[in-house]
Length: 80
Image (tube, rainbow, N blue to C red; front, side, top):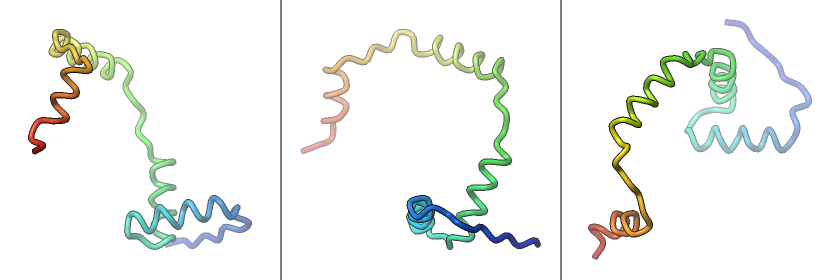
């Protein structure tokens, strides 16, 4: 595998990277690799398929009305 050295990383960016690595329980090196993979290997979204899924979801949920009362009841259910 190849190695890469990155120079002059801004302190705030390095801190974000360090915090992210800690949160994901990875080394900083592993976190950098994951970030690069996400950025460079991101999949393209098929717009037509996305719109079709959104329309299908809308058909299934068009009668669902979320009011403050419904949301408050859902939040409080099960709380004693």
